[in-house]
Image 1: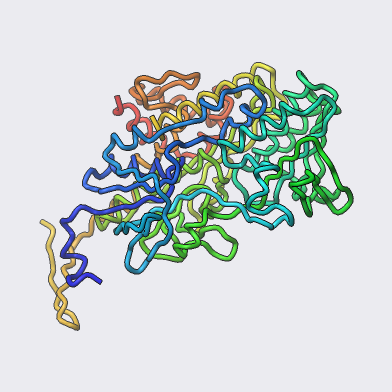
Image 2: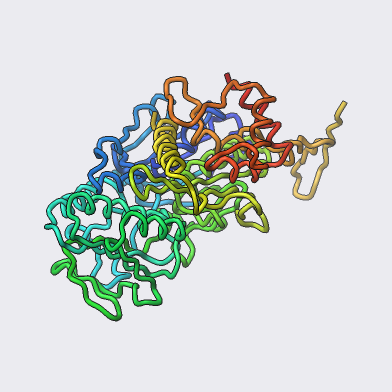
Length: 405
Length: 103
C-alpha cells in the first residue's frame, strides 16, 4: 500500500500495462501513447512474432504464403512502448501488479487484458492439450496453420476432410465456413473426388444464406454441412486414430480439423476478470472489467454484447478503450462510443461476402443499431463478389499496417 | 468567471468542487471515437494504397454528401450503405470535419 494518497502522485507518469500483443493489445498501446505521451506503456506478449488469423484460411488452401501473416513489434517499440516478449503469470488487482514468468513485477495504474482465446481442453473428450499435434485446430495461426496445410497436401484424391465447429461464442463466427469453402476450392482444383464435411454444434451460422447459396453454386457435391439437429455435434475425438465421433456416426477422415470450444485467454481468469462463462464482462463505454477495478478487457476475451469476436472488432474496441483510459487517467469522463464491425469471408478467391454491424451501448451492453448493418445481398453480380474479395484484402493490409506497421 | 467552492467535510478531508464541471466531454461525441472504426478499412497511412479509397483531407461537404447518399442507398456500395445507416446526421458532420482536418 502506498504511504501517501494516490493524488500525491498525480504528476507522476501514469503506468499502463497491456497483456497481449494482438489486434487489440497492440492497438491499445499505440493509440494510448498518441493520446497521452506521458503514459508509460508496457506490452507483455509471449511471442516475438505475431501470426495473424484472418486470411490464414488462404494459406490452408495453398493460395497464400504464411509470411504474409507474420508481423513483428518494431513499429510498436518505435512509439516508445516497452514490449516484453515473456508471459504474464499472475495479476494482483488490489496491489495493481503483474507478475511475469521471469519473476519480474510490473506495477500499473491501469491494466488492459487482451489475451485473445484459449481452448477448453477436454471439453470434447479426447481433445486435450497435446491433441493439436496430430489433429490441428489451426484456430491460432502459425505452426498449426502449416500443420493442417501439410495434412491437406498429403491427402490423396478422394479423401474426406472433416471440420468440427463449436457452439457460440467463439473467435471468428464465420471463420470455419470460410475455411470449409477455401478447402473445397483447393480440392475442387487439385483433388476433385474429395469431400469436405462440416460437423456443427449449431443449427445456424454467420452469413449462412450467403455461404449456402455460394456452396451450391461453386462446390456442389463437394461440401456438406451437418447441423446440430441432424447429429452434427462432435461428441468425442481420438487424435491417435484420427477418428471423429458424433451421436450417430464415427468418421475416419483423411484430415480432421477440430475447432474446440473456447474461453478467454488464461491470464484473464488469473486476473479475476473472467466470469463463469470463461469470458470477460465489461462496461461498454470504457471496456473496464465489471469484476475488477482499473482493469480493462478488449478483443476476443471480452463479452462485447452484439459485437462478434473478430480482428476488426478487437481493433475498434481497442481504440475506444485507449480513449477511455486516457480520459480516466486525467480524471475525466469518457464519452459514449459507437463502434463498427465488418467481417469479410472468402467463399472463393474472387468471391467475397461480408456482414457488418454498428454498435452503441444500450442498457449496459453493446447493441446493434437498428436499421444499420447486415449481410451482403443474396443476389449480386460476380463483379460485386469480386469487389468484396478485393476489399477484404484491402482491409487486411490496412488493419495490419495500423496495428503493426 | 467560474467559481471554485471549498468544503470541509467529515474526517477533515477538504473537497474542492468546481462550480461548473467540465462535463462537456461526457456528452459530446468524441470525434476520435467516432472515426476510430473508419481507419480499419480507410487507411490513414501516406505510404499504403489499397482498393479502399482514402478519406483523409477530403472536402467536408463531399464526405457529408457521400455518407448521406450511402445512407439512402442512392450511392451504390458494397458495405458502406450498411455502415452509414448507423451514424446520425450530426455525427456525419463531425466525421467530415475530423477527416478533412486530418491532412
